[in-house]
Image: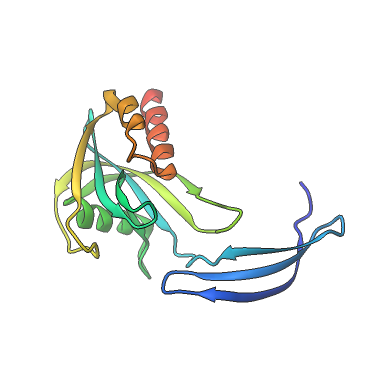
Length: 181
């Protein structure tokens, strides 16, 4: 493993309601120096949930995404609240976004989205044994819950508005997990 670069200097160069951007001046083991920018994450993390309604059906949500300026189809997800465990965040997000809780939550893996610019991690979970339960969420409009048959996952991958990399990766993780059993 190469030696991690030395951080020579750090400073916050921009802030918004959602992000802080830090400039870091690095010195690499070969003597090269570079300045990078990165978003500072909250370190509480986020969860993404693959809800299985039954053995053959996953549930997705369709919601407006400001970054792409369109409605996107994705798995339920959200930030972990202060003092909340990952599993508690899973159940809360499920109840807020799709109107279900889960009696069987299984951790699959954690992933990053853009590790060169952001240290935030999303932990992916499989949620089974769903039961009706809902909580008020922070979404500005009701989310559309979209059931999708697992045997038709390749058609989902062809959907133009199913483009979020984390959701695509989670779908492949699910496929591999279910094929192991």
